[in-house]
Length: 247
Image (cartoon, rainbow, N blue to C red; front, side, top):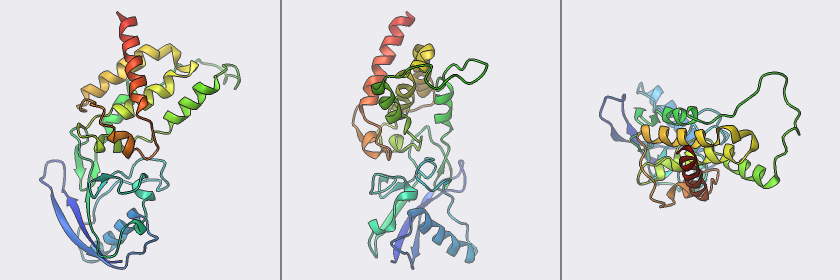
């Protein structure tokens, strides 16, 4: 396939950015989107130009590093991570726009790379459980009801990619934060920090400059791991409960 790529290029956080057009040929439909960008970068390097900077790590759809907006959609036209998006979803001659996540809390570092450390600070505010010292506890020492275990596993699938923030018209991190809160709050191991966790993580989310949630639902549509929109409602109930108990 031959494609026209319009890619956001930005030297650093303090520089102005702009869309730059590239023509790439010899693209196989079996390539992933990142492999296609690798192909482009090889051509740029051979031509003595600066390659396009983009985040990636495992390339197996589980690390959440490969975030970018493709033709206006977080991770592209399929509900998956960018590394798992294949070029068979595009056609010969297509024009593809590639941009970084657009959110005030995710400043651009370079080209398609953004600083997502705001997520780390949210997790640091409560994404943990108390662990007593000594030997590891017996696996079945704390019974976990199946319903709670299933709910925890469903929300633990969040990989922190940031697609929910990029898709939200308000740049909200409610889906990410709620996934982390619900994951731990429904388990007995998370009970000691149940109130402090949700209060701390919501406060940290607001401090990082994320927008407010207006329940448009775009976050859940874009989430490559299918975190349900109901997570936000569950977190709101947890927040109200914790606020009343704190008073």
